[in-house]
Length: 349
Length: 198
Ligand code: HEM
Picture: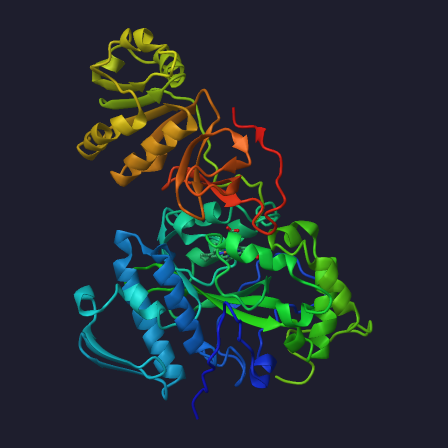
């Protein structure tokens, strides 16, 4: 049985919702009642059936709507997708990876057939059936990275590895938590992370880079990151900050449950075979407070995490304006009882 | 996004004579003083293989002192924009061993470095020395327009008119600091504008 794709929007009338199954599989990012940056990297291996880790590249009920939103962003601002000239080979690597993974995980929706360099790609949810020559850009309607990332959920950065560093030399970035690919393209690992508070001082980026530059092909890794977003808006780019920023002033005790969303990024790291680059998919999951608190453990824990979040992190994540309203709302759902270890809700996995 | 951070912010040094036969200096205004200072430590004959390209400040100072170094070539330009075609040509046709020395305002250093990077010269093989004004070149993240010589915090975008926080986040590729709307969440909040990049 295939996925039933929802018809929904991430802008204007914001009809995005999670089905009950998708609420239960939400990748809740807190394994304890407090949060601080750490080198939280682990092997990216398949997880329990029904979880977001059932497949290493996750496709869910929001797939079609997300791809439509991406097309709208790109039509308004083509600079969200850029690739420096030396990155085309890495783009082909990424195309192969995403086609293989999606076809493997969801054979009812995606099919890849190969006859030497002659490839046929069928994407049923988006109504695509293309035959092309692998490695020959003239046989695709876009460059290889753009072609496949218009058909894959999440943002993607492709990093070139040289001089012991990683360089952000290509990317498709339309669902970002307030950073600009156009500004950061060409920067190295330390430079694009420059705005992050506290983590540099803790040596986190030095250790993280050492880990990433040693990633082996076939042994991807992952980590979770999170922030919060008002309304289920995917495009919270700095480019459009003057358009979505005012949303942060609209949170009231009455609408917290509907407006405030936890935004979790499942980030993974994969070595690419031909280019020796690394691809960094940033898969974004949104959940509104009303949906999240259907799992009592998550409600209690989120209350404690947001209440105690260090000020620097709250400022960086842009929570300052509505944090008190949110904490007060969550307090009512926290009876003070202990929370079990681990990420999952009390009941499943 | 936090206002303060410095890892992407360029770090400038002090010009010092490098080994090699071909040296290109690009400087504006008080950047001339960096070259003149360096010349004191340069071996005899150093400027025989040197080209100096200079954009004088409004006061027109330092032209004579640079000429007195007797570089193989000396070129005066009225502005960076006017210099650009020549600089591109020089860098594209440069010898493998060309040494590049950039001195003066951040805007000059950043833009000259941008051209050099595009010509395939690695940023670590360039010498830089900051002299003179701290005025910033800023890219508006919203409309992408560049505003030159920004001295205030916040600053108004010369293109779209938004009031921007001038961040320390810096792109070598764009040769610019990032400007982000400072009152995006509530336009009625208008923080006072202070001259801080002098
Ligand atoms: C190569 C892969 C990676 C890419 C492309 C990447 C990219 C980014 C970008 C663009 C930002 C936003 C910075 C801004 O404010 O402008 C960011 C934030 C951050 N990154 Fe990375 N990153 C990568 C790997 C990592 C790793 C391995 C860690 C490990 C600890 C890490 C930790 C962080 C943290 C803690 C933040 C702040 C996030 C927040 O509080 O919301 N990143 N990253």
